[in-house]
Length: 126
Length: 292
Image (cartoon, rainbow over all chains, first blue to last red; front, top):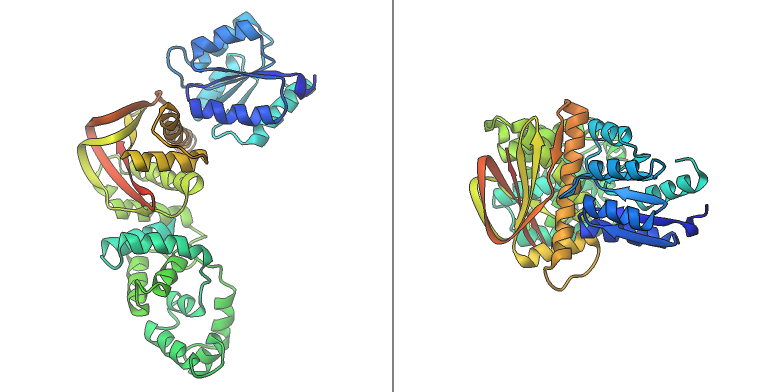
């Protein structure tokens, strides 16, 4: 898969964080970027769009990122969910990986790190 | 960060005004550190001797170092050593204030000596910068009296690093106060829960809030809207997230964060001990509140 064929879902309750990551990812030439503002919306948008990559915040209202991740993995065990959070502690990391996340990015997310994730998914490394 | 605290020290000792500091932080980008300032810092020359060399230079076409050696104030070896020193940020600030006429050389020499002695700052600060900075912040804010001094000091150290990283280094930390409540046009609140509970907030007026968000987002805003709130909130979230990571990695303390809350023209009621830490930027005063 090429990056320009990819669809990406960004789940973050911060409008600012969504916009910033969305602008970076759009700049890499992906096919489409979708956004969700909480865990509940993330699960519903995942079901609707079946994106190739999901960037998921952890601290979110209604349904947390970890809970949303579990629901997405239950729906699609091959989902490529990358946790993108400010709280990259060992315990959050363990929780995320145990629940099916394929990678973890500590906020603030550098453009290069986001690009590397997309390239790894494209190569089938993640 | 030593420059910001040196600025705070000068302000608190009424040696210069907030306006002097704002101008100096802007001008110091273009300031080249003079040999005389390095010699004062190293304790090799007094302000009076530096003045003497400066005055002599007006009638003799010689470099400062050569003249200082000729006048017997320093050796050629001293000059060599001073010339290879990396410019230190707080010295640049001091020299800029002297250049701008806000401080005399003598006032600068005394302030520098007192500041370094009070905060146990040595010339090789790069070797033990973290510890020196930790002591400096603890001393500046008198967190020592609080049982959560270590937490407050770590939080504020990280906060200032992130202010420098994301907003800019042109700020002056002002004296902290212990508060029970705080009213402001805009307040962002985030709770830190786990082994202990804490609350971190940013409180300020609309103009400053917008300018702060503009610097973080690197965008222009015309009014405070949801996006400006989200931007200020994300700064707090990134800072608090890194704090939580440090607590886990360095102290084995597991914590988590709650989504941020935003108050407009509201009043914050705080339980426990809360410190208000004002920070002056050219665009206004931001109040950071940490309650434990």
